[in-house]
Length: 143
Image 1 (cartoon, rainbow, N blue to C red):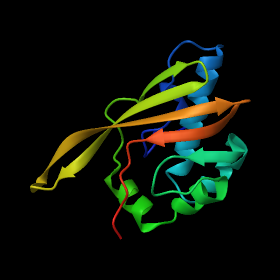
Image 2: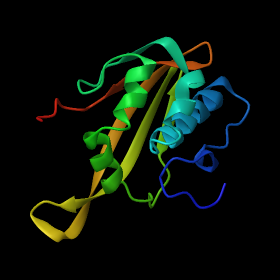
Image 3: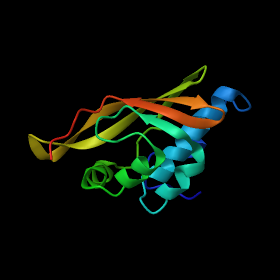
């Protein structure tokens, strides 16, 4: 893969290759790398369970809802603010859970000429080699 224009790429996975936890981390990174581009979002289907549960209040549960979300104005705004990461995401896997911490550089709302780092946390549950459930700290958006 060439230099990515997004922070999710498999080369960033830790060196504990061969373990189930490593496979779970790679699954999360693969899914995220596909979701940041609405043109590749459809490719996440085989990575998610049929009964995928989404705890983000802005996205309904189910595979179709995740894919549809990538085409919304909210997702477009998130992509616009997502710059290549200065550091790879931090991934921690324990049992069937994977936690990812991502640093996002965002425009400072008080001074648009400056940026600041924001730290985002997500967690997934893996079931039979597929992502089955997702949690994050998202708040309900106003429209």
